[in-house]
Length: 117
Image 1 (cartoon, rainbow, N blue to C red):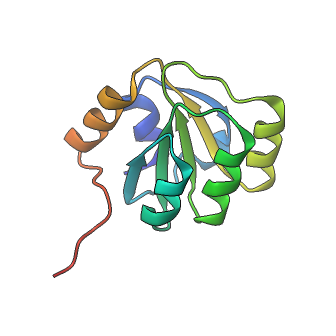
Image 2: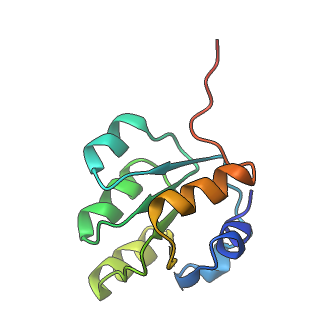
Image 3: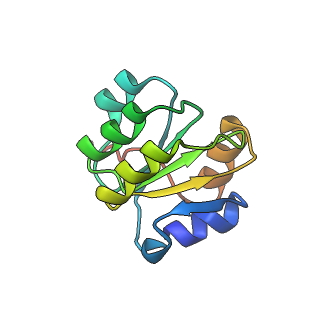
């Protein structure tokens, strides 16, 4: 799924990274606890969160993520936007609550981490 498709599904606004909307993503994670993100996320992932602080961007960067979606119309600070730009991260914001946003992405084919047996 492309980041642009995620933007459409979530009726999201692009905060930064519009030039990367054609990038593909293969998994997603929804969490407000960055410790869970560190334990769970694989590369090429989207993070959905309502937590607004610089640690979110630093965690996404460290985990090789490509997109952060802030739910509940949360807005990143200017410092967060600069960090995201420096890391080539796309930031989106949606009015949807996390449960609804994650459900819509799942329903449209974006799953969580692949599990191989």
